[in-house]
Each structure stands twice: as structure tokens, then as C-alpha cells.
Figure 1 (tube, rainbow, N blue to C red):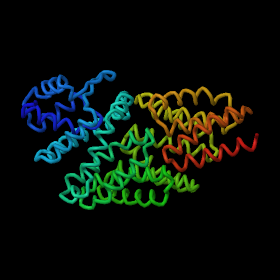
Figure 2 (cartoon, rainbow, N blue to C red):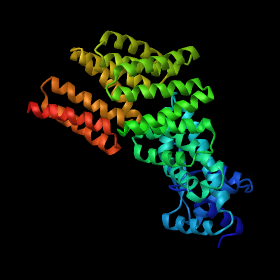
Figure 3 (cartoon, rainbow, N blue to C red):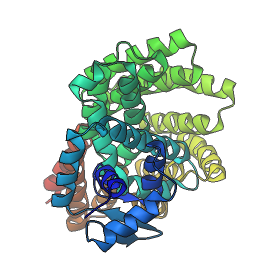
Figure 4 (cartoon, rainbow, N blue to C red):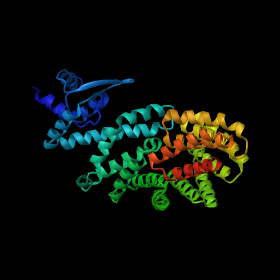
Length: 400
């Protein structure tokens, strides 16, 4: 039998999906004003009674219930008076965790935070689903704002993992009920939803969302936001083949970031302008910008930026007809993307490896690599990448 405090602790633990760390359990216990030490004592008691299990994972231990036990616990919790407070505390903890991860994504701890969010994605998903329940979003702006905040800060994780459909679903749900939300958080949600719609090949929806985002950023006099929205409008124009509009909007964004002395964002825009120059056939300018970009990204310890620069240098050499310089840059960039688990970029690397093999008449290797890219793009629902890689596969077929 469980005492009243143990019963309360048991009900609270059922809110975790896929388990939770001791840190998370202690934080939610504290938010619910449970007595100090209840997390350790309660966990030990439930472990002894086989109602809880502990599994070590790298540097942390996760505590979880068997699903049948958790389902019983969540049913009891839902029928009681404390369900709202427990779910609120759970959502607040994972929002705080995701926001912390977001601010660490461009630094040296990027890989560690990616792995941590990977382990917690079931809890994050549960928190978002609860915040967006229809009856809850009509009760006030608090839950809507929390849903907007959580769905926006998760974008780097979702983007790297290629979870576009899930990301867009949550963002679009949050945007649909966000009319009364603050302009600052709504502008960010619109911006990230635009990026996902673009990745999925829905350029019209992406442009609509991005223009709404830009208008809000302009109302807020948010220079960073304006530059980001302009940059993404440039990307959309680029996809449509309107390279002149892409150049003008990209340079406008670059100028804003330069005036702000935002080094990380300047590097981001350098990459955009470099790849645009490469697409326009100006390989010298493209490589010069990429060299500057690579130096900045190395100083910032930005693995993603370093990898993007390296693979674009490889692409420039390939398009310039200098295949001997391609593989070293491409392999170094691919290794970094693989380390981060960046599925979209890995798929583009497979395309580059395949085209390099095709140029060297290694048709089996070319087909193998490009087919791997097609599968990854399809898995992510990345329409532009799927179309591009299929066109490369057609080139291989014409040579066989």
C-alpha cells in the first residue's frame, strides 16, 4: 500500500512520457510544493515496489513506469483535482528546458543539447499537445503563448532531425489560435512555420507566412527579425529561380546584420550570398565569401556553420570543374553533419557524393548515394530535396 504522499507522487510521475530525469522530477515536485526530498524518497519507494524502473543512459538516470502502470496513473490523475497543476508544471519545465537548448544550439554544447532533446521529445510532444487542447486554448492567452514559445524554440531540433510534418502541425495549430497573443512571439512562430512550409515545397504558403512575420517584425522595430524574414523571402525567391530578387533581399538582410554587429548572423548571411554567387557561376566570389564565413564559424565553434561552409566549398570546386578538390571538403563537412544528426544536410551530402562519383564514371556508387538521398528526403517530407535528388538519379539512369 502507498501512503497519501506516495500516492500523490505516483500520480505526478504518470505525467512523464518515456520517463524523466531526477532533475525533472525534482523540479516538478518543487513546483507543486511537495516537501523537500520527496523526489528521492518517493522514487526509492516506488522502485522497491516495482512501480517504477530506473535505466542509466550516458551521464544520467531516467525513471519510468511500464506503460500499463503509467496509463493507470494518468487515468487516476485526470480524474482528480490536481491534474491541471501537474500538467502545467510539466509543460513549464519542458518549455524551460527547450528554451535553454535553443540558446545553446549555436555553441560548443550543440551536440549535447540535441541528444538531450532527443531523449525528451516524448515529454515535449505531450506538453505541446496538452497546451493546444481545444478547450485549453480558449481559456486565455497563457497556454497559447506557452505553445507558441515551445513550438518556436524547438525549430532547430526539428529542422536538424527532419521532423517537418510534426513541426508544421504544431506551429500551424498554435498560429491558428494566436490572434490575441503577443506580437513578438507570434512573429517568430510565423517565421519558423514559413521555413517549414518552404522545406516542404509549399512556396506560396511559405511566402504568405513570411510576409506576415516581416510585417509584425517591422511593427516591433525588431531589426534581427526583419533581417531573418528578408533572408527567408530571399530563399523562397531563389527556389523559384528569381535570383535577382534573392540577391537584393539577401543583401538587405546582410546590411541589417552588419549594422548590428551581429557576427553569427553576418556569417549566416555570408553563406547565403556565397551560395547564391556559386549558383550564378561566380565561383571566385563564392569561395572568397565562404573562406571568410568558415573563419568566423570556427571562431564561434559553430559546427553547423562550419559544415555548411565546407560542403559549399566542395560544391563550388565541383561546379568549377575541379573535382580533385571536392572530396576533402565534402568528407569533413559530412562528418560534422553526421555527428549532429542533421538529416537534411546528410541527404544533400549524399547527392554531392553521388554527383562526384558520376563525374568519375562510378555509376554504381553514384546510384547508391543518390538513392540514399532520395530516401532521406522522402522520409522527411522535404519536397525540394526529393525533386532535386530524383533529377540527379535520372542523370545516372541516362548514363547506364
